[in-house]
Length: 313
Image (tube, rainbow, N blue to C red; front, side, top):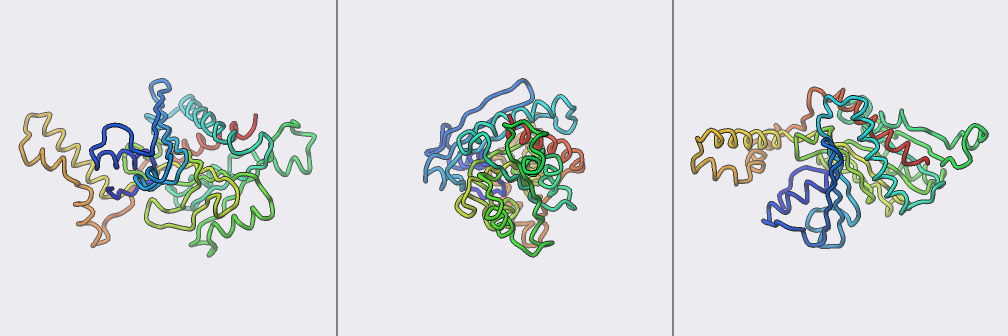
């Protein structure tokens, strides 16, 4: 399989199919698509067995990708519609993992001082926290309210502590029944930057998409189910160069200036060629768009609203 840096199961599946000339389903993987209006597309990827795991490098489980058009110029209505899609998919996963009133801990990963990595901490600011109110002021809440707590543990570079170690201590003392972990992701596609949300019931390996792997946050390491919600905020410089070259070739071909060399070039693995040039000189940067501030604000609202409505009736 071509080793693009991407955290998205959907992209890994597409890459595997392209590399192996597969037109139908990959063995061990099921996919389903749903279109909501003109701007939202949901793709559900289910890894069924070991064959699926080996094909795309993702654990057995469910991976739901919600793609949104024009998030750069999204208004309140667009944000609300997208958050409703997140709510629906998240509710479905929660129903299979915990009861209606089981404690949930929401965890915002990332560095609040680095914009592309600040999604998790920003989402935490807007989560409806109820655990302490149920303990000290139960009269102000409905009796069916679910206990929800939240934490933003920071990053290893500023705390000196692995995120897993911090969360293990919290889980052992607070005893939540499930974790919802939010993190920034890496994508293979420029178009998906802060325009997609991936929800997975398999946990997460922080930093995997940018080659900075930390200890995994999963049911195996924490003892309780972990749902991961991620938004792509960065791509590799080699990805941008390869995509730009694709667009250039397509434009030349549309203008009837195609030749045998360009046809061959479009079929070759330009990403690996470009990466071989950039990597030795440490020029294969991780890149984010100039509108990242607005995009992060929009997507943090989408994710926070989705979680709030999914965790409470």
